[in-house]
Image (tube, rainbow, N blue to C red; front, side):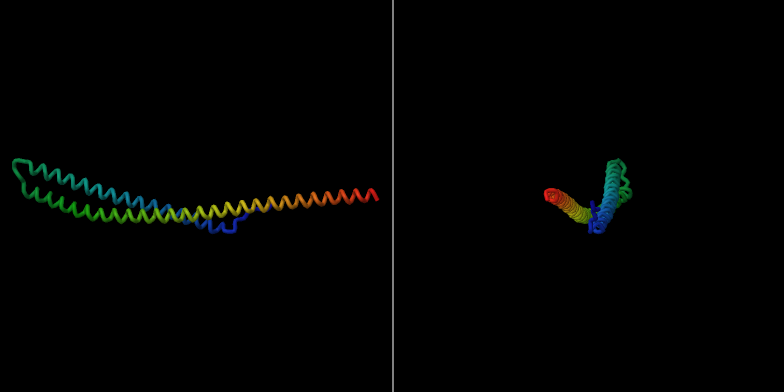
Length: 156
């Protein structure tokens, strides 16, 4: 029996390599998104803390106006930073989505190559079976011919 050799094996290997790279890019993009989301959450928590301190200062009997104004400034700065970080998170999310789409496309291409390989292997098996059947038929025909030839030569 002949050995199966897929003629586009190098293309399949390239698709597998590209898929591996796309998976790594997707994982890196997801990690960066989580980092940016954590930064956003930290800013929100910091703003919340400053707001609580400001409220506490405003409820005291003796108001410390400079401290209250400072915390309000901190809150305003946090609002600006939060808005900027939301933009960064949105960009990171878009990078993740693009990486996801690229990964899906590369996986689809690899699967297509695997299907082609499977079909080529099935075709190979079919051709091998046909060749074996043909060889068996030829042997049977030869053996039958030899028996007839031997049978005829004995009668003569």
